[in-house]
Length: 399
Image 1 (cartoon, helix red, strand yellow):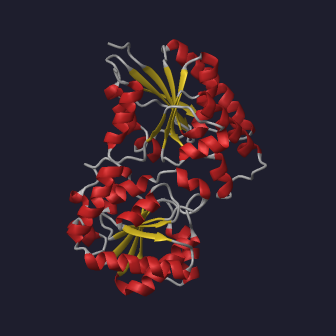
Image 2: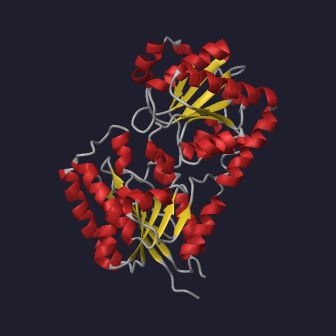
């Protein structure tokens, strides 16, 4: 029997962030389940609101730290964090540094280099170039240059790479010179029990929200940054003209109506077709399940080929056809090949109308039950947690 593993998981998010709650903790529980008896996981989170009270869970030890964005204060944060985590590694007999995404990998690299512990990179995808592509950073700026440097360094040091798409293998070879690492592909998996037929078209919720007899277009997410903004509303204008007054748009977002009104007014859509609500992730399945079709408006820039939208797996698990931009992860290709939605070939009226006709064909040729089963099968194949379990068994299991 192998000795217990003690793994330090480093994230760049707050504990309450959905990226920790839905995109990290479920995997940590799987990891803990395949590790030798007596193993433990230490998770590092960066708290923007100053809340540094640790959260306790069996086998998982939480280490919260205060967050500062990349820059002078961020540099001091990283230096202090690295010093603290080196102490955690030595005090807690940490055997592996496991970093989630490349910003956290920058810290993981430094801790691994100082302590000599092996480094595993998870959710391995480009971040520095993505921030330039979406206009947040400049290619000559300090933040880009430092993170891109550390993406190359951490890639070279890592013992294991766990990417979101197969295409990341070629990106790592071209950009970082990586050719000979153990490489796994783990998309954003979804809890198929939490997102299922039981959450489809809840009658009471439909009544309370005034969505009965409506054709509901649902989007769960943000606007701006890596996501489109005004283009979403231009598409919705075409959808409203195409499907008429039965259309209702359900936006599950932290944005307010006041924030979105300039785009709504710009395209001339009636305010009353929008239902805008922020809900906890625990309630997302019931609200998302009110939809008839879903949107994934990720900005179609080159590095998004290597990411994995969490929401697609959730949409699919609920049997929702998805309208997605082109070149996003493997998902755009899957949607086109499986006929479970529509891919926007461009961000123009012709592309929008073509996508709407594609959805019309899907609606006309499949009953609601057939659509659910066809789309759900894709989630069961491409988003099951069994994919993650097999990878973590290989990396951390008894064998």
